Image 1 (cartoon, helix red, strand yellow):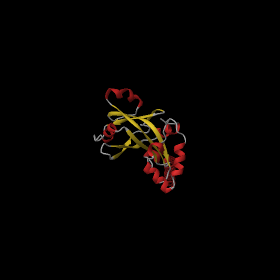
Image 2 (tube, rainbow, N blue to C red; image 1 turned 135 degrees about the horizontal axis):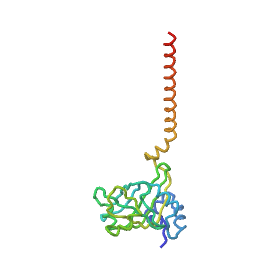
Image 3 (spheres, rainbow, N blue to C red; image 1 turned 90 degrees about the vertical axis):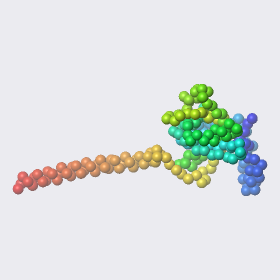
Image 4 (cartoon, rainbow, N blue to C red; image 1 turned 120 degrees about the horizontal axis):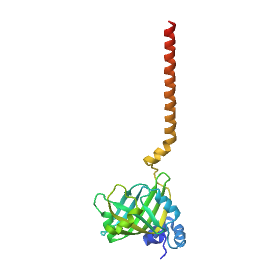
Amino acid sequence: MAYNFGSLIFTSAIKALQEKYGSRRQYVRRESSGLEEYKVGPKEVEFIAERDSFYTATVGEGGWPYIQHRGGTKGFVKVIDDHTIAFADLRGNKQYITTGNLMADDRVALIFVDYPRRTRLKLIGHSQIIEGKDASPWLPKLDHHDGVIERVFVIRVEASDWNCPQHITPRFTEDEIRDALAPWTERIEALEKENNELRRQLHLSEGSAVNGASRSS
């Protein structure tokens, strides 16, 4: 069946609130357009490949939502095809809340955020948990540097949504700060090198003047 984000997420209560606050009309247009099989497109592929973290939301058997932060090397979440993303689940604090929730209800929501550019991507889908020998074929496709892999999450993406940039506070990683400061760092290093050379030449000049004065006396 074809879905878009609104048709999956907007319940009657949500629609009533949109109607109350004047945004329902624009979302009706979005819901009624583009109802075709969802595919992860080039824009999503590029965006996900640049992320080193994301947030995932699940719901437990008791009805409580649970949000978890996931981090790794840039691009550790892999787009397998135009319907599927996957990532390795590394050993952590052994609470297994996300895993347990997904065993009871495989629906999952993910948010990827590009803080410097104030952009975020939301994905919703169904997650498959793959463990043991069944996970082995997936490992060459995934980043799993120094961590111990306990399982692989394979998510069939049903819909996505790009958020507006409002209220996203720009934040920068060490690498991004280092790259931004690189021209200044290079300039400072060049000036220090030039300064050291001038000091050396001045020292030699002063030494020559002293030696000349000694010979004259």
